[in-house]
Image 1 (cartoon, rainbow, N blue to C red):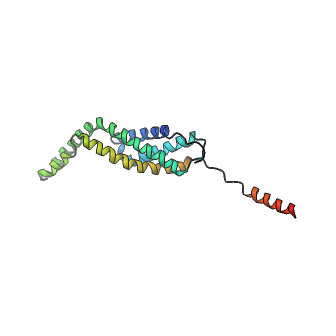
Image 2: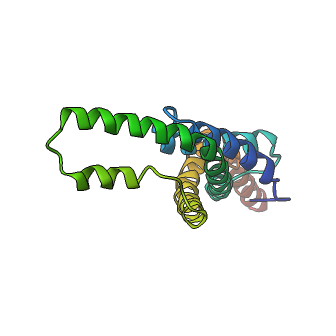
Length: 174
């Protein structure tokens, strides 16, 4: 990258918030990985649009990774209010399955009910750290894709200009 470094924070924040919201809403979050990659592509687009310097794939990877980390935070905090809705829905599904499978062992029902309970603070932060790591990798991938699509290309140096100049100089010396 030549010249001053572009501001990565605002594009990464915008891309991360969009991806975090879309990946945190139940029934929309089934495309979670795609939302993270798309948010990173959006961050790369915003970075390239406002940049006056030539950007490389590494710049896209950095802004994408930051967008992924922001998305993990937004998704984690957005999922808190939806947790109760998901818990109630999960309980209804398990009740319906119990009606159709009366011979299922009691341990099977207990095992499923354990995973749908309230989450502890330690579990929340562990999930946040794991999500941030995964989302950073997916964001870096999306940032590279976005920079390939939207990054400013530097024009190649004029090939014939230097070559002709050196030939003209050699002919004039003879």
